[in-house]
Every structure is written in structure tokens, then in C-alpha cells.
Amino acid sequence: MSSRLCLNPRQQADELNRVLYRIRAAAQRAPRVLFDLDGTLIDNRPRTAAIFTRLAERWASSYPELAAGLGNAAPGALVFSVRENLARMGVSDPERVLEALEFWKDHFFFDELLVHDVPAPGALEFARQTYQAGATLVYFTGRDLPNMALGTLRSLRDAGFPIGVPGVELVLKPDADTHDFEYKKAMMREVERGGEVVAGFDNEPMNCNLFKRSFPRADVYLLDTGHLPNAPELDPEIRVLGSFVT
Image (cartoon, rainbow, N blue to C red; front, side, top):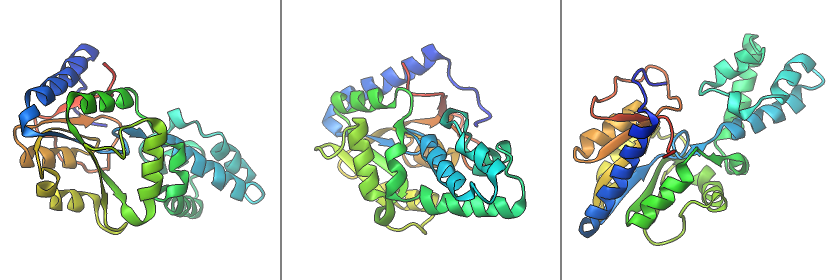
């Protein structure tokens, strides 16, 4: 989580309404809004819970006590760190931890289990509002094209997010090996093609800082849902949201 305090509910609503106002005011400049997916618009904890359930099935006969804990994983109780989740469920033996982490990696970054993803609180409504206000929505994600494109399109469609229509773009990494931050950094000039970036939302401080450096006039927001360790200090102009609820 961020060390900075989240905006209170009234402030949060004011900021999100400000973004909608800026979109309408910038109608002649083709306003664009950047949205990360995992940890921002999308709550992927149910995907991780489904992976733990599969691992529990594998471990049912060999490690029944560990399997019982994994099989009862509640999405809402999971945190950002997979290691921390495993520790909370009693998986502490280094060999079992390594096996579990590899199993998670082998399933998390692929199309099949994206069906378990759900919209983050308020995210669906806000994405629709930004689209209706006249913004081009740019889903600017660290997911990759070969392994996650079809599942991403399907899950966004099924959840009700704007997708497959004019004014919506899905930007994916060309391959799984490219680092998320380096890819987003390389794409900064590309994502503003055809319009002005008026706002950006991400759960990683380094990405938010990148957005603010690249688009100084944009309003940039960190979603305080968890992020990678050793994150940099957040630019003081970036505001921290607990959700998209207004």
C-alpha cells in the first residue's frame, strides 16, 4: 500500500468528477484517459484464489493440511504479495513455497483463468462515465498479447466495460518477457497519438510517476490496492484513491 493517505470519500468523488469535467472541457482536443487493468480497474484476487484451489487439488493427497488452507482461500482476504498469502495459509516450507509460486506463475498470466476477474469497486461505472463523457479509453496494461489478449477482451466484455467500440483501445505488451514499466515507458508517446491525455490511473507508483512526467497537465491517480516492493516515492502531485466509488 502507499505510504500516502487516500483521499476521503468526498474528496475522491470530487476528483473523479473533476476528471469527467476535464474530459468534457477538452472535447475539441480528443481527450484520452489511461487505465491500467490489474489492481486498478480489475480485482484479480479471485483469479489467484482459483489458482490456489487448483493447487489444493494437486496437494490433496500429498499435503492435505496445506491443501485445506489453500482450498479455503477467500478472494477478499488476499493481499498483493503471493508469498504473504501463502504464509498466511500455512505454506512456509521453502520447497513448497517455491512450488506454489511456480504453479501460480504458470496459471496467472494466461487467458484461461481471467474469467474469474471482477471489476474493482466503482470501476465499471467510472469507465462507462468517462466513455460517455467523450474520452478515448486506453486500457494500458502490463498484460501481454500472446498469452492474455483473448481472455482480456472476453473478461472486459463480459464484465460490461466499453470494449470493441470506437474510442476504446487495448494496449498490450508484445511478449511476456518485456518488463511492464519499461514497456509503458517506451509507449508514452504512442499512447497520446490522436489526442490529449487528461488523466491516468495505475496501482504502481513508478507508473504513476511516469505518467505525470510524460503528461504534466494530466491528473494522475494511484489506486491504493497494493504494488511491487521497493516502489519509489510518489510524485506529490499524484493523488491516492482507495477505489472508483463516488
